[in-house]
Image 1 (cartoon, rainbow, N blue to C red):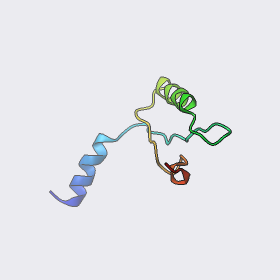
Image 2 (cartoon, rainbow, N blue to C red):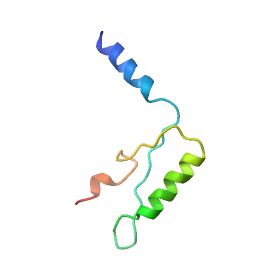
Image 3 (cartoon, rainbow, N blue to C red):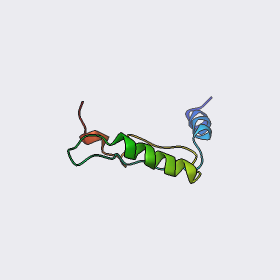
Amino acid sequence: MSIYEKETEVMKKFSGIIPPVSSTFHRDGTLDKKAMREVADFLINKGVDGLFYLGTGGEFSQMNT
């Protein structure tokens, strides 16, 4: 199997509308888990096929543990 065929096979698993999801925070800088659930629920109820977290649409690269 060529690299192209492998990539094509992987892409079949990820199809449809998969939007990037922004990170939500409280004013004090802590993660707003309730708001994140609300955003996820909203997108799912609108019919998206998946959710893309930790990409360039979120702020995870600016977060620390």
